Image (cartoon, rainbow, N blue to C red; front, side, top):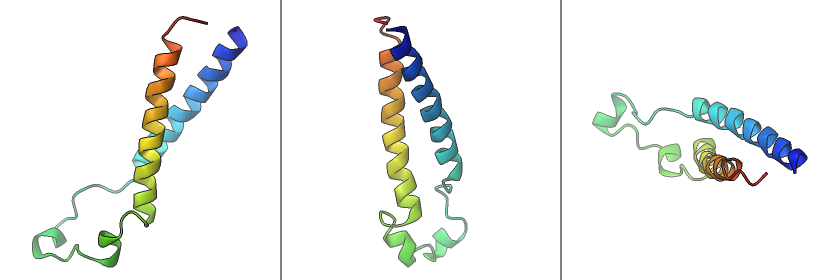
Length: 79
């Protein structure tokens, strides 16, 4: 059981590092002065789900869920 706990802790550390890196890679929500005049409505603004930014958002959600689940599992004191 101790080996399983160590493996889960290593996965937890990797998820933490990946989550921090993904969050830092994302752009801010403010579009600057272009949002006032409507210049922020570009092709990439309309199709965010298919762009790199959309993929980062989806991967962030996945890593956040993994982070929460691993935190709960590590704090169960079953191991």
